[in-house]
Image (cartoon, rainbow, N blue to C red):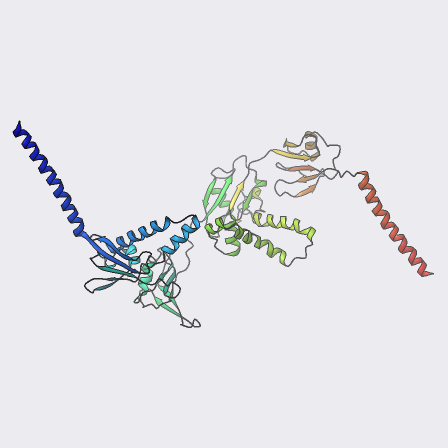
Length: 475
């Protein structure tokens, strides 16, 4: 029994010794692989930090930046402060980074390029006592920019030795959607900002760039885009229809949606130019409105939308009484532009409506037949009355319960297709979807009657006085 206990004790001692040895070895391994790296220059957090020999520069920089961001965000009390902190901490450059080795070796790194092309020459492993120095991020004076036929146009910190291929690479290369991209223009401003040199080069000519150069990669704008018109309502296959930039006919669009249903009301069909305020502004003024800006600045939206109306009023001679009516008419014009077309003749390929050009963003709405006439105003039972071909307006008034006691004689028919107001006469053709409005007589109180009559007497009295004066002067 004693021998068994001794054996068990020995085993426990061996296990404890083995675990202690493993821990010591792991600690020794961690210590042996920990190095010291210093960050200086324009970076959110500078100083000396522990790193691993298995870390590359980009991994280490990203880790330290994340720690600085997390530490700073703890103090943020609202969303505005949060965004401000993020913006301030991101004010450093991934280009022109100086890596100084303890051996005296100096390497210029470009982490922006590394993140694009994965070239590890711009992202080496760290060594003990490395010093990483970030350059001043002066993007107002020390920059190069690129626009045109590239994937990511932008502005980048200039580094001595930058060439044309470098800025193209930073813009993630030539956009393959463009064809025959061979040339670039370099706009080079003089030091005093007065003179502008324009240098046109072949993009294969890897010309050396200068600080402040603005590069444009030349290409004709591609029109191979996702152009659609939207057809809704009473068609066989409603939805988006691919169209060309400016040559697709309305009749062809209707064929694409397989034509109209039996319940389609062609006299009330509409085509609207564009489907949003943004599209309207882009088409009318050729400006691009940022969706985030529109969503966040309601005052700006109001100013932009009211610009059209202000332009219409600017040179007018309207009096105050006319302005409200003109304002309503102008808003209707802007929203309804392009819709005054007659769909009833679209089956004729030689008709104007068939050959009407549909533009990208247009919305075509084919409403269902109402098969009713809406009668309202001074009738006993206002509402929808079933449409009967050939019946006149009196029929529908009778079906709505007849005229009320205070009905005005000037009955109006409002056409469902155009909303045009037409005085009611027996020869006016009533169509499905029309409206019949019976206005109310103006009822005068005795007081208003006396006041109106006194006004007439006052005018008559004034005229009599003037006549008497003329007679006296003639004597």
